[in-house]
Image 1 (cartoon, rainbow, N blue to C red):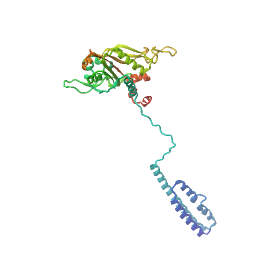
Image 2 (cartoon, rainbow, N blue to C red):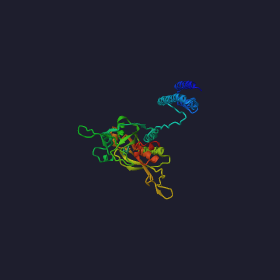
Image 3 (cartoon, rainbow, N blue to C red):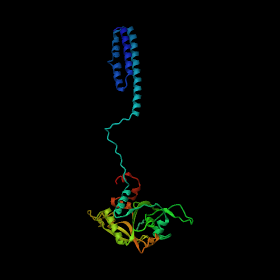
Image 4 (tube, protein in one colour):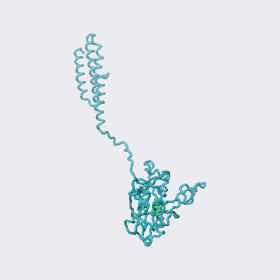
Length: 360
Ligand code: DAH
């Protein structure tokens, strides 16, 4: 090849190479371009190898041109590469890449709080026996929380309920408002508002000024029950609560009533069911006779307070106690849930721990 022809060839390689480079849109093709124009077997490399047949003078001239061409092609390659990489990055950040073959992310499902579930289950048991569900205020008057329930001011029975008082006083400087300590005030509110027959259950939150431990919370749910009519007797109380216990804890349950004191009922009782962990025996028959922990060896588990509505409570709401009688009861749904599901700390209900909550 003559010097002339080589120089023309170099110009041609430069022209075509640069032109081709402009058209390249992907890094993959860019690499193909590099191999074709700057690789060891490219035309340029072959030309450079052929220079040895030229004279010294010619070699100097052609070699310098060939090196210029090579340098230009290399620089252009780097520039193009930079442009393409930037474009790639911009594309990635705007275009949503979706691989539909990837497994989906599990979506955690919401569910009802265990207390809510228990409240509903208990209320449903009573609804199917003809009771209505009613709700009432959590901020309550002393009048309903205590007075109307036969618990006058300064009466020692008030010590049964450590109260959280609202910072509010009447003209005489008396505190008259509190967070209800139980759902029993709804007994008076309901009877004031209707004539017998009354058959209601009242689920709701209650508050007490109390230190918490495994069996005590300062806020918790109660479900109050009230049935008033002509001729209601203690047998009705027993029959109703017996039926309830069997529905919640199983058909084999036996129940026990013992005398207890609540100012708004007479007689008052506490109701227990036979322990379903040890079948009322008080011990577990696993080899050695180990005492049952659920009922602490007694064979019985207390589940609620109840009684015949006190005549003073009936009189207070304008019912004639010589005509009307009734029974009332109050139970703690968290406590029932603890027994039923073997939960050993009541504080779990309100600590928002998903490891606990998602078990229900
Ligand atoms: N209110 C009572 C308490 O919080 C529970 C209770 C006991 C309610 C006897 C009643 C009842 O209606 O008859 O301790």
